Image (cartoon, rainbow, N blue to C red; front, side):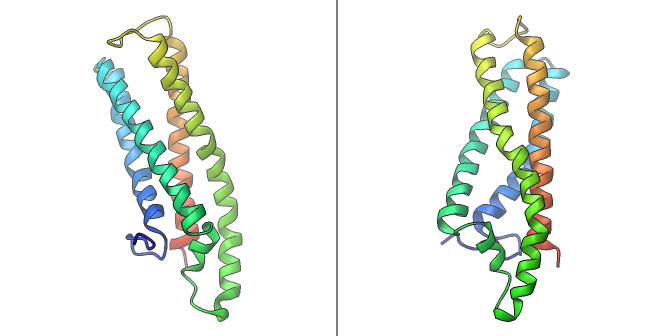
Length: 169
């Protein structure tokens, strides 16, 4: 049913869905940071961060099930772009070109959920309800910025991998 992508490239539905999420996440993240930095709207910041984290964890979980179980790995998704045995050399070249970008992306994609979950879990435990500045604020600010940078690098490297693996000819 959802085996093909919708962005015009021979990918998977979930891969295209995650690419769209990567494009959306950074502006939403910036909005969330502005809520707390300039508006001191701590409850809205908490809600938006928790929502972003939960939605992305579910989306990435569904993506991994699709990629690993349904598609049989990212190489098989790349293989969709190549029609026959004459394309074997092009396929091998695309795989070798994309692989370093995938590894770079995975550095951030693996650390992001860990860092983000730790940041959010500590915030839920150490901030009052409704949220307001507290003793944990300085630690949270540092963890939050590390998380934001990590999420942004995950998005940028994910989009670069998508481009190299599926868009670039």
